[in-house]
Length: 183
Image (cartoon, rainbow, N blue to C red):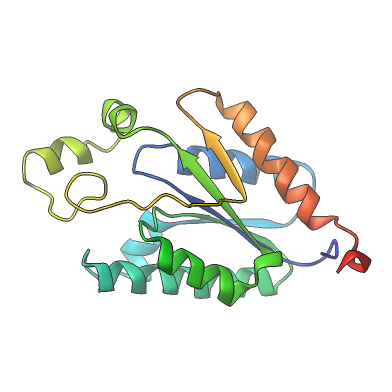
């Protein structure tokens, strides 16, 4: 991939796994290095771009498609689009990879056990889901299908943010500066 090519780095994992923290930290590292990047958070996009959608499987898939369309626009401007979104279903993540192009897409599995995500529960969502106040909550009464072969996997329950950022940055830099003649 040429140095000036955009790409999409998609952080997927359970709520509370550390997707937002990690993607924001990667964003800061990219900016520090002078690499153009934009951060796209699914929670923020849901409040704006996809507020008409609910949490059925069809709505979740459409949410991911819209986020991917926005990320492709960012990528088209030669930037790295850092997407932080649960995107619970494998099939739609694979569809997004295919639409963006596998050479321009990095799937980062932010792996953290459900028990640890529930312990962290930064937005008290697990507590509400367990109390029956939130239906179709990923990991509780709606499935999360982990990637079978993510491009990058980080364990936020075992490694600190700096180690996880380093792992993701290595993958981005490897993809960004790979010699185009190897194709």
